[in-house]
Image 1 (tube, rainbow, N blue to C red):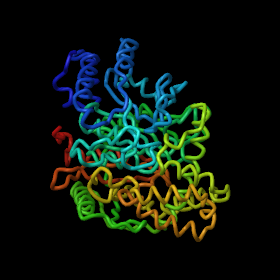
Image 2 (cartoon, rainbow, N blue to C red):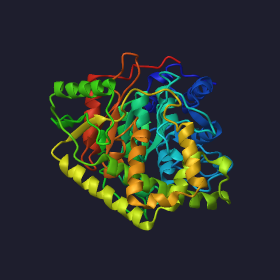
Image 3 (cartoon, helix red, strand yellow):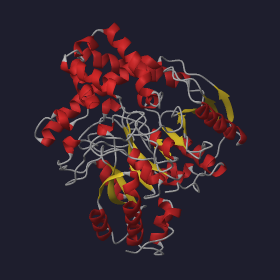
Length: 500
């Protein structure tokens, strides 16, 4: 095994440059990644499946080193992007023995970059939690403190990248699942604009347009270069957004004065911790020192209304997901194969009526329009993405009381009460603060479809990352990349390495 001892010092672009100059070989980079995964994954549980043989085959298929990231190791998230002849387990016992029969467009796009898929990263069951602690595979640990959550649902990807097992990894975001793990693990996490990447050939969109695909990385330039390769649509996609090839790479060196609004008050009614407030103030002051116009602002929308509509959309799509999985697996799941909360989502999704779903879609689109109109005077809006530093493992997962209530609802077939609007609203208004407390406002950019990026400029006194979120106007990732590049230079985080 040829170990490149400086492997962890380089980002993806840096490794690619060394490989193309033949200063190291793709085998050197891959062997180094394998060595780190084998040494540290038993602690982290960030990689649910290794695919070393597949990665070596990829090297043999790409002797010409085609692609911008040729020879650079990466991980594929174990959901939202199928790879033919490999399981996509999605953190669930139900899918442990089921192989996919096709490649997603996104998987193909990753391969076209020349990156070496050497494993599948951990996820919570079906990506439904913002912590990565599936019962089927066990908890993934945060490399900055192994007692803390790395966030979710792309927690395995974030843990592995923060630990420098790989320089970047596939991630996806239906309610904060790129940005929350990035903020929890000290990484760059760009949730791209809606319709930037294809979900073909299996889907037109995911979760009614709420889900977005991309990566988590350690450097802004890796994010810019990878998204430059991923952005685009395939024939049959229901909608798309024009992207000018190369524009994100150009944005890395663009500096312009921005009008930035920052917000400290959650419309869901959850107060950020002192650390989260300090993180926002630090970033606001940093932006002001760089010459940007910065002012405090507030959102004027009903956060609980948004969370109720979001819950109806998600549960409805969970039910549809299980219809699809039944055809793939060949049978419906057994009770012991799926977690209680996931089964409740499936049950509630079946309980709602078509009118409930269309109301939720209408409500979310109305909120999206209002939010974008109200914030249009700003080039960028700065907000918390997590309400506090990463909590202890186990704190975000449903407790025994919540699981018992869920079982009672399903056993007594009480789903009909969720069709009675006053009762439904009261229940969901109570559940929102309980379930969204760690990332109360992450769902907003999934609702609006706007690009948003988590940036790791702030660290607590205990040397734990606490990223913040910057959101731009619709389809304007370039402004976020330009600002992130400027912040990376002013408050560099790349030399921070967890002590594993």
